[in-house]
Image (cartoon, rainbow, N blue to C red; front, side):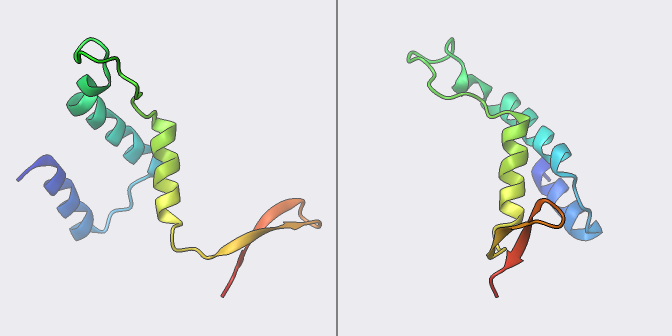
Length: 89
């Protein structure tokens, strides 16, 4: 069984909740390990125009994926002085 499959099975069977930061760091390390040469100027005849996404980039993408089903908008609350999420249902 591959590393990815074993992690997926573990998550499904144990119903583990993986921290977003840990997942982002794992994805970043895997990209560096397996696809890093595609982002390097020394490995390809053409200059690399892409940069390896940072851990923060991956964290943002994961968070956006988690909230993809939320339909609504933000509204300013004067009492608490923060933006609150309002569902559009």
